[in-house]
Image (cartoon, rainbow, N blue to C red; front, side, top):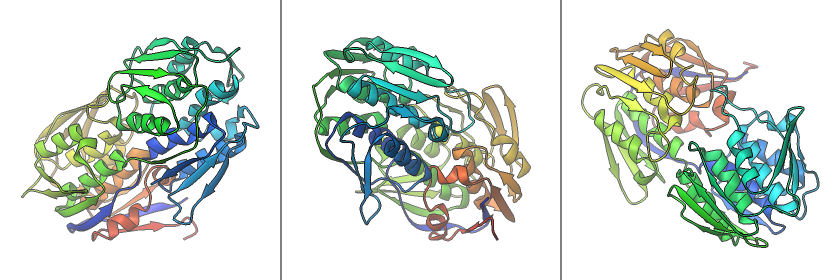
Length: 423
């Protein structure tokens, strides 16, 4: 099993290109199931999760081809040849549940395994199921699978999310595109990935209004058609690399970065004493003199502070001046990185969904273990600012969501390398 070796010390200077959004691409790829004609996605990141979704779609009948630049995927599903999304693939990634709505909308039946993914709480799929029931689906949970039918096809309806769910909003948005009649989704997710999915579906001929707001209105159409769409910039990768010079000092330009994607996060980073400058098509980030300052953070649905940047922010606050309080309101059990940071000398006190972090002058390199995707990169960032060597194991988590981390950071002067399991 590979690990990442990081030697702390030294500022970062240079440019880092930001990839297309993993979470946006994973939602758009299943849209191919809605249509017999081709869907072309550009700016697709090269990640383990993308390969997993590709395998899942191929198992259902999708023909997937990748152009030479490998960031362009061409997907076409002339017909869905197998309506069962098998456990062996689905268990690897929670986004697999997103094939349920499209299959049900197009052919009226689907069998999808309950999904897996990072161990950061239950993250149930009940809102996906309740929303589809509101559109006329008949559902049964049996032997770890969702057995779904829509006799006569899905029909438009109104569904109010009891709490915001990005994945459920995506599933219902795709399903509603082929519903008979009008669907209204209230208290819907507002994330940039939702906006990008709506744009992708609209390019395919869907009639959608309200993306970016809490109310989505979808006028169902009989069929969708071929389209090409460019995946939006990954705001979580952007935020992660915005933090890098905050740990080390220096000045890093993030190519493709846009402030509108990370406003709440950028505001907290500025409050902590980090300079952020927006240019035509990039963000330039540098740390002001001395240590960053402590800030309090509360995660919230977009446009609030993203839960997917909480672990990285906690790592930074471990070396901030003062005491910070982080409150996690999206996922339970998402402070599993805290014990690993404590191994590096951090002072963190966790009580339920709240973590109190008292900054120290310096972290110490240590062997640590990644527990989930975002925790893995938080430990790498901490290693950049630590004295000595940090070895991060179980980095298969990392490869699900970040491409070429070692290359991107070493190009800016970091001492970082991947150590392969075979030595």
